[in-house]
Each structure stands twice: as C-alpha cells, then as structure tokens.
Amino acid sequence: MLLWLTQHLTNNWHFLHVFQYITFRCILTALTALIISLLIGQPLIKWLGHFQIGQTVRDDGPQTHLKKAGTPTMGGVSILLSIACAVLLWSDLSNRYIWVTLTVMLSFGLIGGVDDYLKIV
Image (cartoon, rainbow, N blue to C red; front, side, top):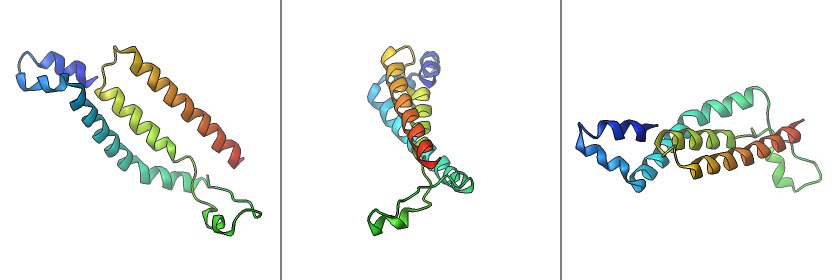
C-alpha cells in the first residue's frame, strides 16, 4: 500500500526511489512489525488475562510446569497481526506470492488458535 503511494510520489521527490528496493522495504517491514507487536502485545495479554484465557497444566506432569498455570495463551495473535499489517503496508500487493504466504501464515495461525481454544475449553 505504501509502495504504491511512494511510486506515485517519486515523480516529485526523487529520494523516494529507495522504496523500490526490496531490501529497504524488508527492513521497514521488520521494524514496523516490531513496533506494532510492542504496541499491541501488553494490552492483548491483559485482555486475554481479563477473560481468563490461560494455560491449563495437568497434575501428572513435571512439577516445574505447574508455575505455567494461568499464563495467558493465544499470544501468537499479536505476532500474526503485526506481521500481516506490516506486510500489507510495505509489500508489493500485486505479487501473488505475498498473498499465498499471508494466506498460509494466517491459516496456520487459525489452526493454532483453534488448538489453543480447544485446550482452554
């Protein structure tokens, strides 16, 4: 999305040609995903803890695992959301491999979310 914007603004400001390099956009994507995950991580964990969406631990397991009881699960949602938002912002959306990769990533995230949900219920 931002790539499209910079392509149109390149006629007026030539320094925006740097956005055509995939390495530069990869760095910006990683930084954007990091910032988004830092911004939404803590509120998401508090929200999951508020609804008591926590880890359950069996009594027959190792005693060291008992301290994990109540730890909020489904924290991968923040990682998936931050990566998806950053990729949608900085990638070439006309590239079909971007869409395939996002679809596969979000599909595996959905499988993990269903697994966590079934573990809670």
